[in-house]
Amino acid sequence: MARIDREELRLLVREALREALGAGAKPATAAAKTSVPPPKANSLAAAIHRAVSAGRRAEIDVAIRSRDDLDRFARDIAEASAEPGIKAAILGGRVGFQPVGGVAAAAPPPPGRPAAPGPAPAGGAFEMKTGVLTETRVVEIARSHRKIVLGTEVVLTPLARDKAREMRLELTRQKP
Image (cartoon, rainbow, N blue to C red; front, side, top):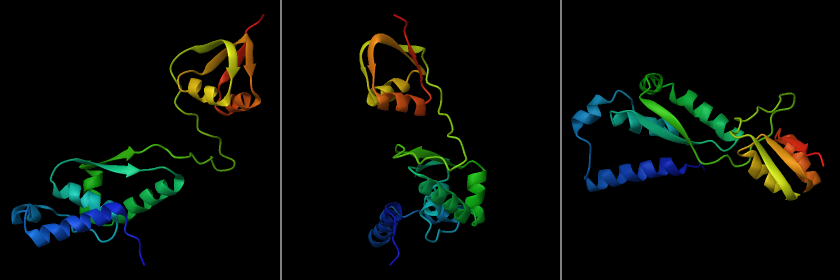
């Protein structure tokens, strides 16, 4: 049995309700204006079709949380572009795509390819005079700084050191 994704199911339910109730049906002129034939099973194509049918530029939300999601999105675009009206809408800029949702767990880069550095956070060096620098704290600091200056009384955990190296954060210790 084929799985239907949530958006496609919603579209089908709305269409069934519109037909059953007869309320809110589109005028014949609006249906005649659209040059895009109704999509088959591709939910992305269905979303693009709805956007083009509305007659104005639309942003379509796309959830990219993993490499598999990105691959699926690329395949869906390629499949949807087989229909000339949808391809024209994408290339003409009448349809845009907007990422939604956070990145769940970033997949490691493929072997042999270095990790792409993220955007450089703003801010200078973060100074820590006393306390314990943990892995969690390193992640928090890395959101806004590229360098951590440690006081002589700061205890640096091994995991924090490893995480800083992984995140390409510079650790320096103040001289006594």
